[in-house]
Image (cartoon, rainbow, N blue to C red; front, side, top):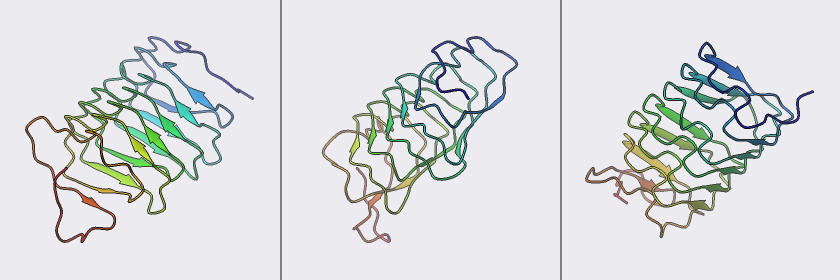
Length: 173
């Protein structure tokens, strides 16, 4: 069984297109650094993955999908993890995630849909986490501290609503 993957373990693997992570790893860093053709990451059901470290996928410019194939134990998404991934179009935040660090999804121009589990445990979304994204709507769980600038859109107005708000009257952040 594989319990850990070291940073740069698959550095520059240009033919790698899809990866299913081992269930036993708990932390993931820049394992696939400069694997330029990587398009899909699958996290299997029963995965023990709890943390995705800063900048983990920032060099994987063709990444289109990050799929959770079942219940997840993921707790945190680090700083700049998906920064600048212009092909990523949607992301489902698992219920277990409690924090999304600053700039985690910054510059994901095609990211239009971000979904939180209805019973999300999320408490913190870092500043600029979704800046410069293509998000058109999002439902923010009620337990999130909304004081930060996590949806700074740099001149683009986006609609969103808080879980306790009337969904027919979205408001901008």
